[in-house]
Amino acid sequence: MHIDAIDWTLAKALLEWQVEMGVDEAILDTPLSRYELPETSPAKAAAAVAVPGKKAASEPPPPPVEANPVADAQVAASRAASLDALRAAIDAFEHCDLKRGARNLVFADGNPAARVLVLGEAPGREEDIEGRPFVGRAGQLLDRMLAAIGLDRSSESAESAVYITNVLPWRPPQNRDPSPEEIAMMRPFVERHIGLVNPDVIVLMGNISCDAALGRRGILRMRGQWAEAFGHPALPMVHPAYLLRNPAAKREAWADLLSLKARLTGL
Image 1 (tube, rainbow, N blue to C red):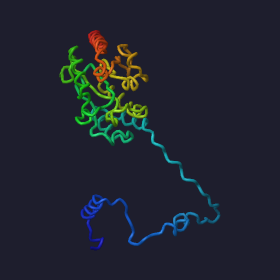
Image 2 (cartoon, one colour):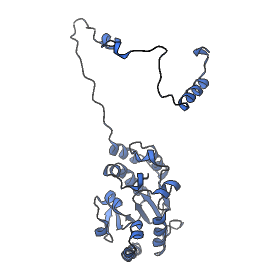
Image 3 (cartoon, rainbow, N blue to C red):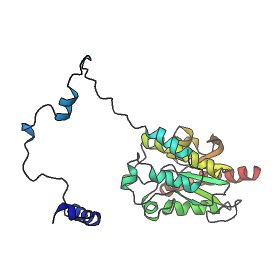
């Protein structure tokens, strides 16, 4: 078949078949020795021809422009005028390699009109599968903790509702801690997320959340001490996963929950 007789659809089908068969390189009809090529290509030779009355100059190519993930995230986040637009912006963000190994983008769960926003760390295995934050054992414990002070992520009432999101929307491999670079590049999205929801208070669950929101770690020292994050009152608390490993710490977590309830009542 002459190549001119192949239409676009057939050409596309042939290309997809070759890719499926494992073809990863195009070859010529006859062998080509790269060692026999002239040192100067025709294009470079033409460019080197001297122009009468003008001295030839050899200018080095401009240096490649390095990507700035944080700056790109700031621009993308600032353009998001709604939660749907923010989710689309995060989904289109290509600088975070975690995206390539995750099954799902874990954006948020709960009522965006809630007075309380819980900021977690990163999705785990169950969250990655389901595409929602805090759905594993730690999430189930979190639901029981919040229910003890009258809060529920499924509530339609802003007074009793909870909105939950994470610093990272993609699961790190083997549930490792996010790197400082990953936290920094996703922080503009977190800040914009909180700005769009505009909660009365933020609960910072764990070290990673405190790092992203307050710029420091040491959750066992910070827990229960109110601070300010992204322009809102923020309460650091130990992560529910820590409570599963250390049940004795539940007493302190209960004290933090009572502090949260009192703060909401005062507001």
